Image (cartoon, rainbow, N blue to C red; front, side):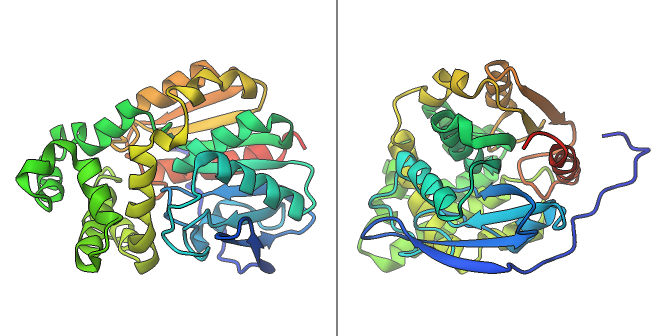
Length: 321
């Protein structure tokens, strides 16, 4: 970012002009909302986790006079019900849910905006429905591969040894060689005390690794009750099942979205989603541009990442449909 340019501020806080619920199965019902201009350019916010849910601040990346801002909570997340549910919760089902929502809103196409797991789901959707996507702004690319999971759950200890040790020490020593499986067993178990302790430890670990410098605001977000209840349970389910996709499925199918205009915003020091994945996705996505933020970690709250995302929403507002 050019330091001589004025810093962009988030757009003023706004309230949805419409909220609703969408039944997508006999078990799951999704929360969705619309903000901004009903006649504006449609953009759908694809939240992270999986299981984190949408936040009111997410709306503030968009000029409300020019965008029709659509947010929804994925299965088991946020205001969707049942909270924290992992049954009937897979990547392909979430992609179907997005299509169901698009049709419910009467939209021919929309722009995608997502980070971290939100980038995973956005890519999966764009590969399945490229004709319905006008553009994609993605941050902190994550494809939920075994290598990425191993890094986040173990390899990251090279940079955050004290955080990882605290995380691992919640488990018996004999189970620390496979922290994902050990945590998943507790998160899906019947012991409410163990389940809650595991969920809080997981959320705290992820939040602490998400910024270049310690950020109390980010940590507070990861300790919100609905995040603690859902994030770890759903993430662990997706981790042990590699997002319910064949190995390398998303990377191998980047050609399906080759012509979709896009921007990847990536923190140079993103310890949750290291830049290598973003770099490889960019190489397989000819219509994309990769912007690496030199002084940022993972979170969208990082100043450089926030500036790049705001600039992108201004740019893409004038492009395409």
